[in-house]
Image (cartoon, rainbow, N blue to C red; front, side, top):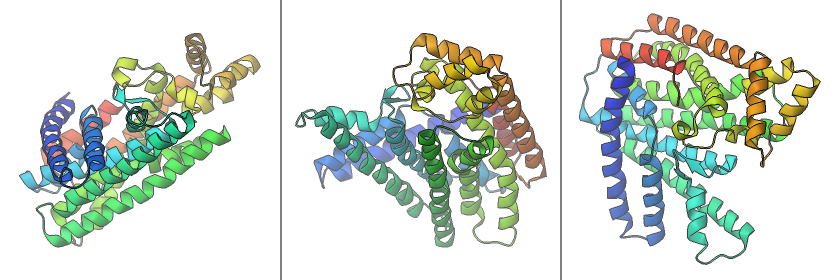
Length: 361
């Protein structure tokens, strides 16, 4: 698929630039404090370890979509959204109590290992790991701002982009809050889950990057709002479809490709469309089995397999797949109405929509 090849090629460029930027940041930190050096080294390893670089690519193709020409300035600027992504992931891993991300230890786990050198109490060690990772995550967000602030664009465009970046994070946080509330409450409606997907995933993974690219290219002009709204009509349903597929992979995917244990979403008690529809369609014994699994920190492989079987038998898996496909169709129809002035950018956005319903990781 052409879009995936374009994404892979762009990832190579972004990875090189991320590596250079973060290594330079380490060198600057050496003049300040060894704890800052450690934090940036951890952020470097965490960020470089994996990820498709979908957000930087969407920001880049959002820029090209205006008719603007590719340039070094926009490639450098797209590092900003990836660092914002690292900030959100570092905090999300603490909330979800995940030990791995992209197959490597999460930041709070790395800080726990560091803390063992001088902390003996287990509770204090956990608190130390979480606290240090939270602060390091904050540092990643300030890096995101710094990259945009120093980007090679007109000052007015940079200011608008920085305002948009704050808006992206501001819109994402309520989605994270809703996710936490639903998990601890132990129940949710389909509408709540879709609302959470829109805030937590669609806004900063799809809509935000596209908007940032457009804003850096165009700045303030009479057509900007209309064109951003058209991009939102494409991005928001696509983001919801992406997260529904992500939740499916969290149960039915392969651990090697996911970079974290299959079933971790079940152990966390994550409220998903998969779970909601399964509970609605389950008989008494199936419902009991589902409830025994969800939020169970010591879940067995057999229980995970039983969970998968019930998801299939209740029609929940088919329902979730069909819903994601409908959302992708909605996104593709909106894309055709948008004023995309670059053929490669259009093909990338159209192809990524197809990839959403086909991906295996």
